[in-house]
Amino acid sequence: MATTSGTACSSPRSSWGREHLANLYSLVVLSMIMNDAPDESDVLTRALTAVGTLGPCRAEAAYLTLDNGLTRTPADWPHATPHLDAQVRRLAGRDGPVTVPDREWGWSLALHSTANSIGHLVVSAPSRPTDDEYFLLRVLAQQTAAALTQALARRAERDRNQQLRRLSEDRAATNARLTTSVSELEHQRSVHEMLSDASANDDGVQGIAGALHLLTGYPVAIEDRFGNLRAWAGPGRPDPYPKLEATPHEELLQDAARRPRPVRVAERVIALARYRGEVLGTVALIDPEAGVGEEERFALGYASTALALELAHLRNLAEVELRLRRELVDDLITGTDDASAYARAAAVGHDLHGPHYLAAVQWAGRPADDTFVHAVGRSAAGLRMRSLLARRSGMAVLVLQGRPQVKALHEAVGRELGSPTGSIGVGGRCDTPSEIPRSFQEALRALEVRQRSQSPHGTTTFDELGLYRILGPGGSYRDVEQFVREWLGPLLDYDAAHHSDLVQTLSQYFECGGNYDATAAALAIHRSTLRYRLQRIREVTGSDLGDVDSRLNMHVATRVWSVLGGRP
Image 1 (cartoon, rainbow, N blue to C red):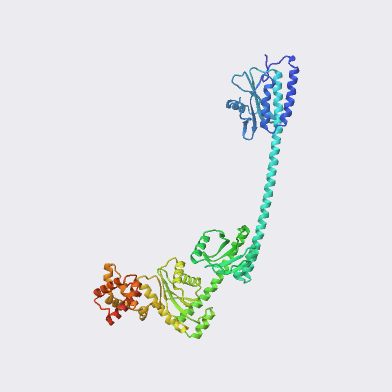
Image 2 (cartoon, rainbow, N blue to C red):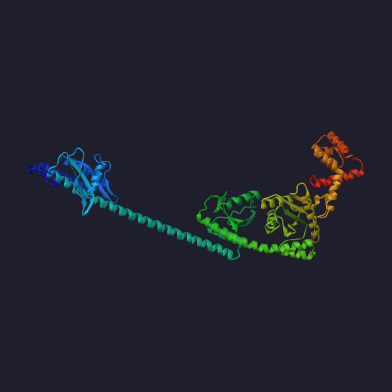
């Protein structure tokens, strides 16, 4: 069979018959089908399938030219090989021969759209096809290129439409975000204006609570540093107002301080009012239904800032008042006339009428600076103790109205300072300002006795001192301790050597007035055991408990020993 370059040998004219016309008709139908194909892969798959119907040829592979180069399409066509892929790439968009194993003839038909190459259709045959057969292959390639062009155009249109939809969606989302941002800014502006007005109009803490209630619709509670209610706005105010114990309240504040945003605690959302790192109070939205959202939390956070500034201002005013109070306490301690004392106390909001007690407070390892004095003052206020406070001679001094809760005060100061290693001495009752200097000296005496005792950390009142009242503060205790050693020394040494309780037994015996039954009951021992111990005391001390002088001296010695907490 004679051939020409790039074509098959001429076939006899009789080959134009029904079969040829049928093939052309089939290509027309195939063209219509390919034009309706959903994508490029489907177009090429139909073209590859049609090759075998046009003669002895076989479809080897099809390729699509994309931005990233030549891509076999479909990738899983059974006759395609990497070697064939490389041959087609070397043709660079042109028609040309290819080598196919076990096939005499192989050809890559370039698929063009106008001037651009959009792919290849690779066919093979056991021998060179006729001109008519090759003509049909060329028609198939042209129809495939046309269908591919339409498919690519449809894909480009789909991509453009999809991009337009994305742009439209992005614009709608951006507009929605802008609308939300404008709404948020408007809400924030209203929050700023209302809370600023509340502060500027001297409405104080109550004004802040009212503004926050109007902004959020939730009841608002504002508490001080210790959990006492400062202001309430909205319905449902509890009566009486619940207050946490000191320790749980402190734990709540510490937990909230670790959170960057308002924190929910049971039915409340709480924000701290902090000024220069110090917690001055709390503001809370009462929200049992857990409906508080971001806008309400923003308003709550801004209200906490406004509250912190308000409380800081009030504290500055209080510090001025405190300075006046300190000067008053200094004058009361050194002595001043009653009329002047009453007037000056009333000017700083304290009523000096009625019973008062002086308390002297010192803490191990803590200087009596402003921080220490403020801690003592806050502790007393937290216990609802009305007092005047000053710093004097390395200690904090309190002029307390009414009988003080001394042990509770010691515990409260210990929590404030983070250490229980402190001492508090309390003087006797004074009913007029002129008696305050005496009560102060008694407080110093009680403080010194406590610090010299076996348990130096704690509280001692002047009323508990007994015989130690005869000693002034700073006096020598050597003679008193020598007296205790003189009368109780043998018993003290015996107890230390034998781990016994003879000194305690003797002290209780004296306190019970020498009554055997009362003493035995107080010591929780049998009467015969008490009789044995008393006999042992007589033997160790060599003293006669029936002798009036011996009995008096030993009773005084046990009293002093008891005040010293088991010393010397």
